[in-house]
Image (cartoon, rainbow, N blue to C red; front, side):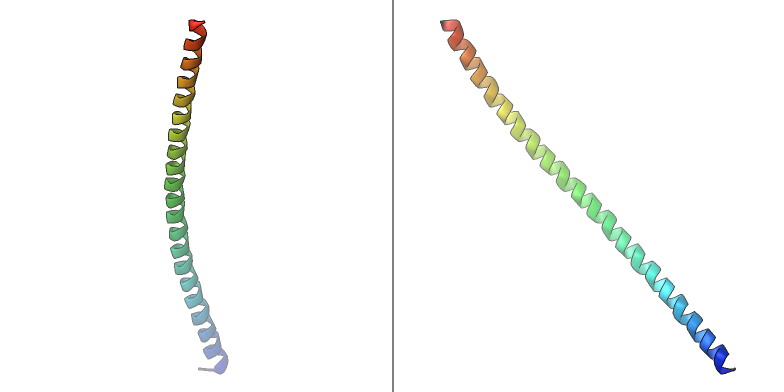
Length: 76
């Protein structure tokens, strides 16, 4: 084989191996990003749940205060 043929063959092998390695790396990276998206969604849902519970408690407190003020007004 000539030197040019060997060089061409070696270049093709290196390029092919590089492409295969990149595709595997990209697949792994994409899977990690998808998993992080799921984790972020779960965290967001938990935060919303905590906020909703806090808002509900505030509403209950405001309702109690309103009922007390209405009772005071009715007494007068």
